[in-house]
Amino acid sequence: MSQFVYFYRGWTRPTSPAEMQQQVQKWSAWFKTLADAGHLADRGFPLERDGKVVAGKGKSVTDGPFAEAKDIVGGYSIIDAHDIAQAVELAKGCPNLERGGAVEVRPLMTMTS
Amino acid sequence: MDAVDALVDDLFRRESGKMVSILVRLFGTDHLALAEDVVQDVLCRALEVWKFRGVPDNPSAWLMAAAKNRAIDAMRGAKKAKAYALNAPAEAPPDVEALFHPAAVRDEQLRMMYSCCHPKLNEDVQVALILNILCGFSAKEIAAAFLIGVAAVEKRLARGKKTLALSKHLLDLKSDDVVGRLLAVQRALYLLFNEGYHGANATAAVRGELCKEAIHLCGLLLEHPRARTGPTYGLAALMCLHAARLPARMDCSGRFVPMELQDRSKWDPELIARGFAYLDQSARSWELADYQIEAAIAAAHASAATAEDTDWETIVALYDSLLAVRPSAIVALNRAIAVGQKAGPERGLEEILSIADSEILESYPFYWATLGEFALRSGKHGEARHSFRKARELARNPFERDHYAARIAASNMRA
Image (cartoon, rainbow over all chains, first blue to last red; front, side, top):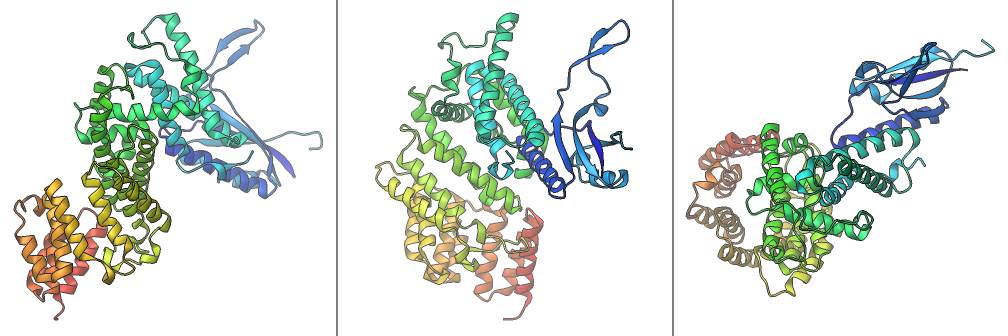
């Protein structure tokens, strides 16, 4: 079993309360499917949209944004899967995709690999 | 923590209505847009956090606490910037803690409901405002439910919000205006319910949702001593007794089932019991409004175990009283149907044809369908076919069209 990080990128937020509630329900259902099948190592966290960037030798501090709106990472989770193919397959169920977003699947590098 | 199932249906929508009402009271009616932004922000945070971390044990309290914090931030920011005066000067500055107290929340929603029914606004604007502000429907969702254009809904909402802003503050529940305004509020809820019950939208879910909202808001009215009048009880009774029939009004393929063919075991016994209890309450009042009479008609139907057991005699008499208080071609049509059921289809046809202002009815598919049914039962196949064709032309959705097409086919069969 290997571990992967899902980065949830840029999605269009729903604007009506009913749609928002639907999204909560969809995400919860999706996480539950992953957890029931033993794939969910850590649900992770959503990320605030703004923060700071500390960069370079000069340690310059700037405000976000860090990317185009469509590329902003909105949150992450950690997933257990046999290989990247399975991790990718599992990501296809993510509700983020229905709203024009993307899931970036990145293997964790570990000592044993 | 994983209490998704604890997320009550419509929690986001309902809480949105509560939060906007409280925030408008805090910020003033001319800052409705700010209140809406704050609520949007609170709901977005809930969405993000809950989807990762699970739904909290008391989602409503979580949202209220978040709204309170954001409200305090917004007011601090406004004070600093002195960009706008957040309170109408006539009113004492509202106490944030007190406003977010659960007991106050209901009153704030009522104030908003009364304020949406401003006498300057048309009824369609009032209904749109109530759905948008108190029930958390977006313009797009209202448009979809009513089968009208989004632009038309947006126009209504803009007009309504402008009037709200100009009224400076929400209606005081202790003021004398409340008594007069109650009629408008009842009427708006009645229209909202009817849009769900009789409206053009064929989706059972949408119909049920609109009816449920109307019942919920009417329940809020009943919690307030000054709004808890005979007519309000009558209105609540009529909504419950009609809504009880919703589960039987569509067959499994989504087609409309007329009342005489409905499987009465599907009628919701809980709503019927509630309806009867409200009707009893309304009878204790001296004020008589058309709502009580309509509720009594619905109660007469609910009391009949089968369509054949219906007490048409009583129903015709009730329609006579309804016509006296609220003369309208639609009521006259319904009365004519009851007469036809009681005394035979020929009498029904006579009654329909003698309705004075029937031109209004001619754009109403149900009018033609009724003519068709009575003609068919009288053996007048040609007339029946003609009427059902008219009904099909006027049908508002594919299910109605299918239903009338089937009736045309029935008229084509030789008796």
